[in-house]
Image (cartoon, rainbow, N blue to C red; front, side, top):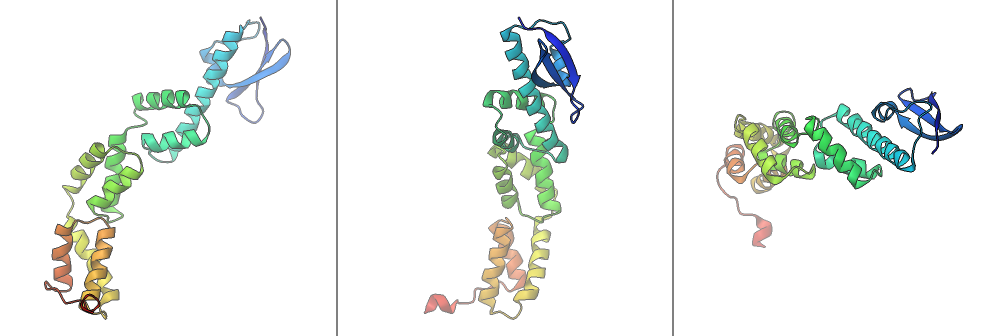
Length: 219
């Protein structure tokens, strides 16, 4: 069996070590992998040992890669999985790392959904439907998204938000025919994710609670 003859710190990556077997460079591993496998000079390694060490090194790299994403901002499990897949880590390693991150509470879709819903309501001025759609794009399951959005929007005055958006939009619509302004105002509020029950009274306040015939429809 080959023998570990030297373990050297890598010049450009202080947290990695170069492993030499029988005097020749064999592979590089993270310092945590050295500790996990108790690697030391004079240690003999079987082919199975080397394979296990290399798998452990790949898993550690995947974990570190995931943590770099998490340090930038909170991630849903699905979007983190997608990013790690693009980095070409194997599915078995990825799922193992994601399970560990979930156990450590670094990945928590319920907390992620609540944070995103709060941002949608408070800073982006989105309605609840838009908030749920954005969570779906991030891979949050429907029930988790629904609970988070309902909890966040329960304490928000959605009508007041829609009313303020309508007021600002009307500054650019004031010279249009009422039926045109009404249609564009409705389109804007729908894209923002507000429900029809919220939109109708807001538009009635902004333009009037009556329907003006659309000449394009009558022609």
